Image (cartoon, rainbow, N blue to C red; front, side):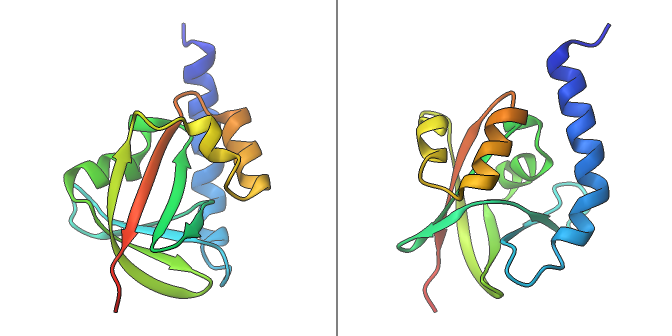
Length: 131
């Protein structure tokens, strides 16, 4: 029998699969582009986060179960769309960072959803390459 954590993960990812293609079309929605670890194709995921200096910070609600985390582990070179503009960067997974505290510095609506739905919070910092 699936655990509550498994059910929450399956339901949330099923909803995200349907909504993400629409959400990532919103011009001001931040989007993370990774390279598919198996296909080698670009994979775009709308998410919440915030640019702070030359870094973009985000928190994954499902940690290592998130496909974009798995892609980052295979290839940390990413792109992030911030306010309609793409930035190349290198992603760093930070398991020792306090993800709950980090969420307090990120956009409130997304942070609330991540806290409520998330089962394995994991911080990611993307160091943006300057042009």
